Image 1 (cartoon, rainbow, N blue to C red):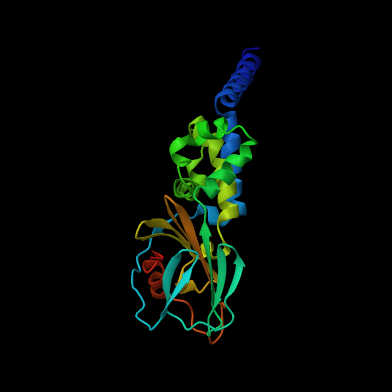
Image 2 (cartoon, rainbow, N blue to C red):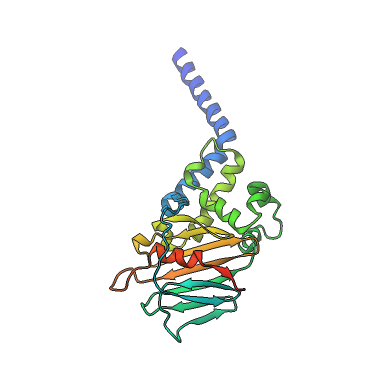
Length: 249
């Protein structure tokens, strides 16, 4: 009888503990498992931005390119007649090497607007989850997204972090371009700051860069062949383009 009573008490204790765990940590566990699944399904979400250590600047002969109110230097010969405007604010520049550069102007807070549109007209919930500072600019919001990893979302995370994290991870997995698998870097030039997706040393097919200022942003997409005789785009050449960006006088 005593043995049966001990077993019954043990079972009751387990039920109580399990109930308490579900009450206090059930939602957090669900969010943590969701975050771990995202990390397994999309390994790139485990990456976070690091400082760019290669600050070299190419000294190769180049030419100034002007478009849509901005100008910058190109350290490669342009293929005459093959530059194509693809939208009122976007242009594709072809180089004799076979590589290319897509350049675009981005309106201020474009990403923030798309993010808030997820709320279907009522952004109060998103503001409570992520705070007004994160929604102040595209740079602030993207910085929050890129800085979120599955490891930060656990059973003992606060409700705000546990509930908001999986959504950021899903967005992160979608928004990081394929080149970002080789590295994500912080970049700064003049009044702009942003992110570079892709390590030139790994010769990814594309290297995407987004930089932001208070009055809008700029996007650069450097495209190249992953293999072949054509010279790979170097970090020094990318830095040459970025460091020379200016508004047209």
